[in-house]
Image 1 (spheres, rainbow, N blue to C red):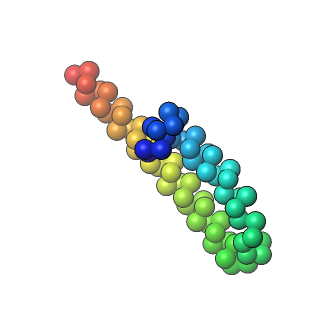
Image 2: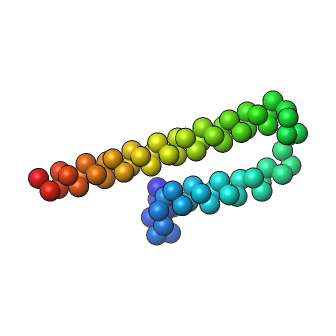
Length: 71
């Protein structure tokens, strides 16, 4: 992630910061028990899952490059 490189922090930290800020921005959203609120929560959960998988993939790629460099 370009932003994490620019800031000099781990990319997971950027996602953590984002996740901490999102609830503050949702204050004017739909009622808590509405279908829209449920869908928003699901979207947020899926975004985190995708971010985690991207982090795993980045780690695996870096590990493979390291292994190849040692050969």
